[in-house]
Image (cartoon, rainbow, N blue to C red; front, side):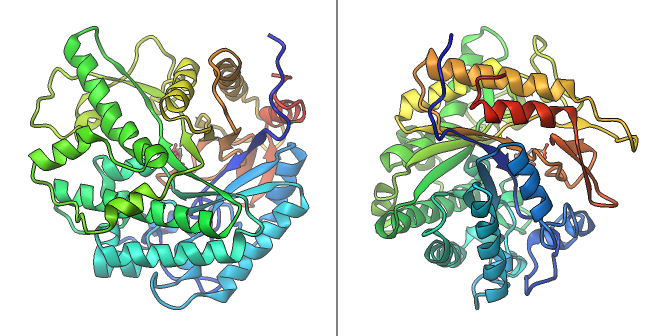
Length: 452
Ligand code: BG6
């Protein structure tokens, strides 16, 4: 097949603020739930990371030299509004304004994400984060201000990273809920508040600017663990709650009927108020973006009607014996990636955008020889081939491809052993050392994906 990807296809890198910035108590920044041990994290892990607060230009130069034309970064809410709902911190705004200019000067299109699990600590402690409508409103205020300041220069926006995680077991980690015992009503309230915020910000952007905005899912492909009818049924239900329910809002402006039936049957209080339905109706997205790393199996033999779909994976997730896994048990499944691209595009009709993909590996630089990360090259090559098949054979409209942490950053747990980068970062010296895959990515991006 000798087909070309469209001109202007995006190739780039994707990160979050707490995994890149450091400067946790500088530049007028307030504390987030990552900056304290109180919220179940090790605050030390997040204090420096790859130190973008003091110097991001070396990484922007590396991205340019890799021929990237997009960088997705996140604006830290607590750097802009230190206590979450009070005064704006102009120093923080100036930091991101300069960062955007520095990207544009290198020909790299910025994509802004507004929230990546790092609730301002004051709002977590006072209100239990997104459990409160006040916090939803504070977030919308922050988001609108960022759009006013940056949307004239920034064409691509997403609101919540991996929005469906707010719907899964462990949602407290993502939404700033500190209280210990959570109910199903808590899960659905947080989900509803964040979805309202997503739609309000989408409408605001559309009414005031030319820029585009997308929903964002953690899109793990889930297959039935056996050929049993029950495994198949539960996989479909999982998909309905975990993926379709969100995409129904992004594409059609309403929740899934199946989910609302569940809410009704279980007498779940999701803080539904007059006017909410209209907010959802008016917040249609321009694209659906997602992270994709792996696939898993769902074994439903121990599940019953009593189990909320939010907990299916916690109880029934299995590893696929037919696939190869990395050291953390994440299965490598490019066909699943192709399937996910097709499923999202053909069911919802919006362009799709994979904005996180990659493989975590343990690597130690010996101080002189290039790191031979052939497995990473093979992982990305196979996923890009799968993406091209989705585009050219399955007819999917794809906007671009962003790898996760293509210059090393700490993992979501804070550990520095798990690396995704084409560039090695020495966390002691902050030195950057290109790996073998750096040169491969460079050719791929320069050839607009034809030289895989
Ligand atoms: C996504 C998150 O879930 O996956 C990132 O958006 C995270 O924050 C990435 O780093 C990879 O996961 P992990 O746990 O390997 O860092």
